[in-house]
Image (tube, rainbow, N blue to C red; front, side, top):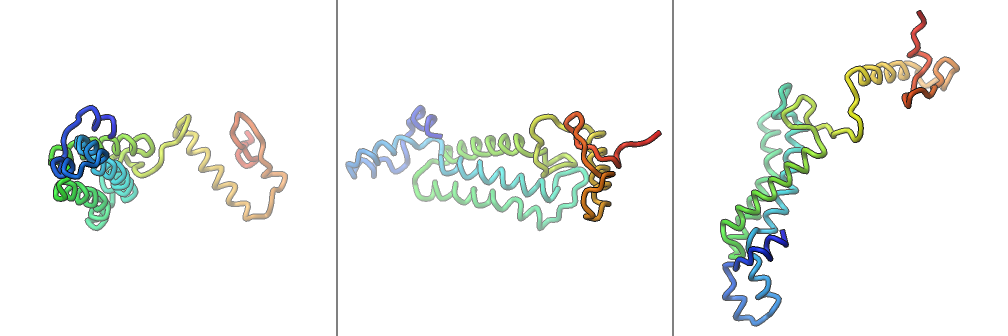
Length: 181
């Protein structure tokens, strides 16, 4: 939020007190009120954290099952951010509009940051990280699940010739996956 602070150059509410000190650093900082950096940074981090909890508890998902306690726990990071924003006005460091701009900027970047890395809290896969690269199809997922089930049935007896892994099309295929017709 530093570039907008220099661009806006808005005076802090305690600017006259800063002038009385004669400290050039404090006077320069007195011109950087809009938007609130503390508020925008905490809302960015805590929005990501809250959305992560909402996704993990599947509170908003179609197949959700989150409880009221989960919801309260998920929203609590935003309560901390709100408290920090309130203290910025109470301590006479920012105007309400400075804090409000910080909330809007921080929440926006938090939502974007969350959605870049995790699936939507509204989807049935909420809380799961997005895969990097090519997203597997439903058929590939089913095949991989079948491979894992077959490999787990080996009971740790080591790699017998019938369960040796072969490379093919960048997929690992075991002899159990080959169907003889």
